[in-house]
Image 1 (cartoon, one colour):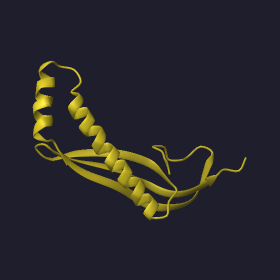
Image 2 (cartoon, helix red, strand yellow; image 1 turned 180 degrees about the horizontal axis):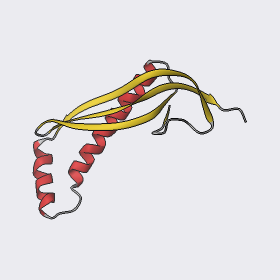
Image 3 (cartoon, one colour; image 1 turned 90 degrees about the vertical axis):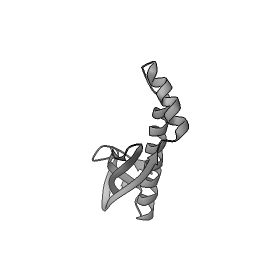
Length: 108
């Protein structure tokens, strides 16, 4: 699966636009992460526990996006983006979305 944040794929031509696809996950911090993150924040800098949690949520949303695109018959996603919103304290929604397309290698 080709996934790009651009509106085209160099070296490929878009044969058909399939439509919007998305992957969404909702995550909460756990007690251990809250304690560890709180301790790390006392010293300043990167709070790696929260960075890891955010990366896991983004990866899960991305994987779900790809699954959705495959299920609609796409072989690529263009204009892919992430969005995140806090639903309530400690609970965050992460959304990956884009346009599912079918592409072929461009003639040379």
